[in-house]
Length: 441
Image (cartoon, rainbow, N blue to C red; front, side, top):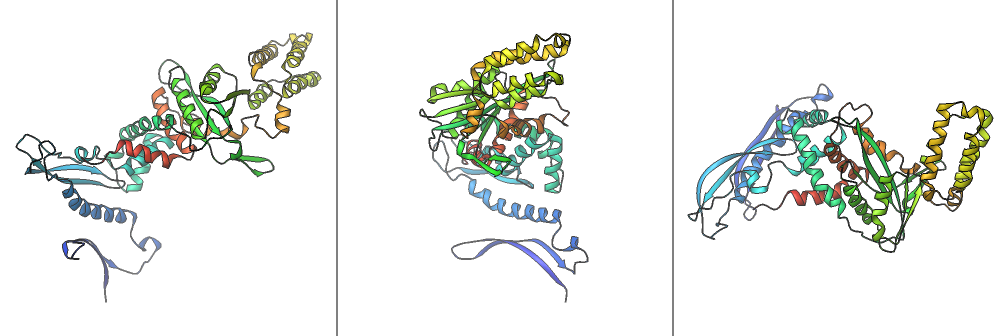
């Protein structure tokens, strides 16, 4: 006996059970699988099955979108031809036949999928394009999406993916800005930082700002040497707008984590002016902003200076004074070090020490007793969030990536990547979809 698998689609009357239309989707002989590749359907065959089933469903479903009354005068319209319209689903492309109707008052019904639904790209496909485009170059994203569809699709080309990223990011940004707190919490922690991105044009690079906000209780211990933040909200901006967008996003991030007028928000940053501006943008929405010069950045300043061994103890005392919040003593020790005759002979070292001194003096308002804060089990450094810049900015826009960026292009990518990093992408997408895909007319 020779056997075969026959896949049939039927359109039935649910009330009577009667089959109104039947169509054979696929008939395939069943043979013994000689290799694992022969077991079941190939990838391309699976996609072809989906495409045929989609065509069958769409052909019946689209008829339900034909208006039975005129949306202008309310009279019954009459049919006036059929029109072919493209439709792009998650894995397959389709030609949809749309019935046009016309009313004597002059009204005509939409004759395209886009006219009926506002777009001819299915939300699932737009979501995939935006997400893939935020992970890797648009060219690589196109290849990956085509591989998933087992065909080369024009809708997945580089330009289409760039447009998808822009469209989704434009809808996502106000969602993040307008976030509302589900509950209110007495204390929040915020890490504010920046990363440089290679620029299109005359400037070599520009800075993208990023902030991560979380509650202290969201920090858990993985092991004795490592902690992790289990719930956080990260936002980022590359716009050249005097940090206006970043401030709005930061307010939204704090709201999402439960900021209220009774909250204290502890902001850790490297002391740059733009970080100050972002941190204090929430001042009128909370009880207090506590600005701390991040110990992680202080430590980095010390690591970049090679001190002769005979002055190592004096240099370490500068660090120790800062660790205990005594910046005046730290400056005094630095002046003592700078004044040493043999140190004076080393121009490069003097320049580095003077830069360190200026850094401490310019940021003295943010220097606290880090030792005391550590003993109390409070956050004093951004080492918990130090990978944020690498994960959100550098992995896509720096490192091995050789491309140059416009500010807007980088900003669009950052909206999606920060949403994914915050683990809020699926919830955010529901809001984006509701905004981009209204109900059919």
